Amino acid sequence: MKIQQHFVIRLEYTLRINGEIVDYTERPMTILTGFARDLPKGLEAELIGKIPGEYKVTVPPERAYGPYDPKLRLEAKVSDLPETPKVGDAFTADAPNGESLLYRVILVDGEDVVLDGNPQWAGKVLEYDFTIHSVRPAEPEEAAHGHVHGEGGVHH
Image (cartoon, rainbow, N blue to C red; front, side):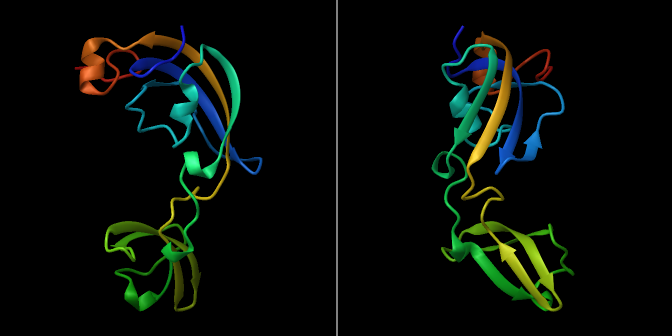
């Protein structure tokens, strides 16, 4: 059975960037296509039309987290931030266009701090190895609720 929108899929994946593993499932996960917020961007679209089996796909930035935007990289002083920053911390601030954005601390050098508002994998080519274990159409209630019920999903 080929995967379509509103199908329940049990799968696992490994995500590599430049050959380095950056994310993976520790055990198979169950998702509902069209509502798969737990999947990295770009992977859900690659599932459509597939059947159970093993796959390798490459997703370019424009189908994943978008291009890297250097305008979303900011320099600040430690005193400008609400708490003493460490690399990996995140702060919410206004982006150049005025919308609120999550900025990650990517460098702390004395009093100087570099913040990046780009998604962590923006501008990166995503390399997926994934295994689809099972596929089934979603029950009408699952599609209406936007999540899987029962094993691997929500229990009401």
